[in-house]
Picture 1 (cartoon, rainbow over the protein chains, first blue to last red):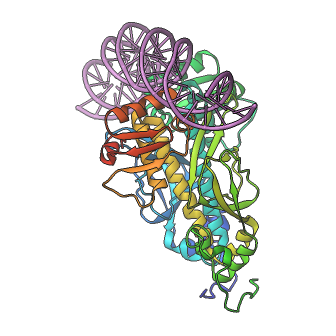
Picture 2 (picture 1 turned 180 degrees about the vertical axis):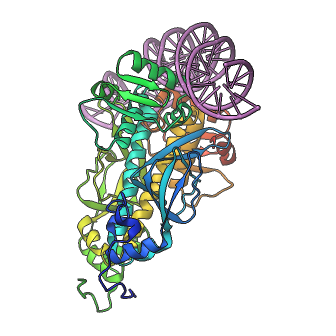
Picture 3 (picture 1 turned 120 degrees about the vertical axis):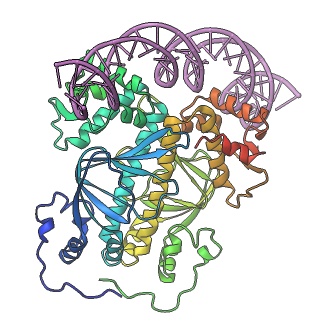
Length: 237
Length: 237
DNA sequence: CAGCCGCCTTGATCCAGATCAAGGTTTCGC
DNA sequence: GCGAAACCTTGATCTGGATCAAGGCGGCTG
């Protein structure tokens, strides 16, 4: 059933040439011909912080920025159930039974392409399916870790775990020893929704970490981890 | 690269003939020849409640019984992060970074086969990968629902959600109107570990549902849902 | 640059659920 | 059938984090 195509040598498409996601996520599993075909159907775009990213039948590489995923209860309570930090990708087959909303937390750069193309390529490139599976399993492991935190950790353990998670994802080069500093992509309200706490408790725990010398709060959105080791001791796992 | 084999007509293997999982899970995605090959490497076995099911490089169809998956914190706190109810399957590629322990909650019947066979078959039967992906995404959706419950629901909402989840999975034929009754596969301690509560709180909430006429506690392990509608109102989502 | 609005911090008080405590019930070995 | 252990229920009290309350601090508009 597979049609022979792109038998001639194919070069890397211009749009992909210097792309951060070229070898990661889904694109890394593609053959050169497939990459060219996908590139033709891809569009790079920027979105502002706060933009909702509805499921429009595409996959998107997150080239820069951060996305939050939320589940809402009918009375307005909200749980953040996950994040996508660059470089990662967004989108999935098989609609979730309960709706999950995706929203840009920061200004972002995305590269989107229709799922149908990937679905078709999967038939003769099983590596693509493998990547999707690996990605889903990673998200599952993360979600289960946070179940553990939400169910059994104290407020201060949750906040410590959260800061380490953000640091790990924002700063991939993870200078292990020294101090790590980063811009928080979330408001206090978002942190509270993620950790199952109130904004007051989040604020108090951050203040406590500051007065204990574990972190420095440069400003509301910029945190510096003065002692990663101490933070890890407070993570509680 | 695919080797031609099993070109002659192949009948359903004896072991699979009357198997509950024949058309579900992974087996349902197999061609007849593949099913025969897999059957040759499969073994059906029974395990007792309490048996640990270590990751031994196999997939297992759960033909009867229930498995719990747990994550432990180093100080002994424990979170149950998921369940597998028959008919479902157990096992995954790509080891989780943090260890997750699987344990039989009841006497169970399993049918196990090596992952390597499935991995190889996946190369020319993309449907297998699709099933694995769909399965992983279903587990992810479940995990995120429980993140929401753990982070934002009250004790009574958690217990109501829990009972409905058990009922849905134990009694697939889900008589929608009448009363549903089932054996709880978990102790109060397990329920508490799952919901992020203590056994005392679980016990109190169950007693309250009983005195409100929403459930009947036939005995410690057997519950009858007298009013599914009222339970759903108390679920909180 | 004044005034306002959104976001954050800090303090005081409250309460849902934890912890502590005391039986009750079921199960099982002997 | 008896004793003991494991598990569960119910009550009394305590407490971590929620809620209520009162500013503080930028950042934007006019």
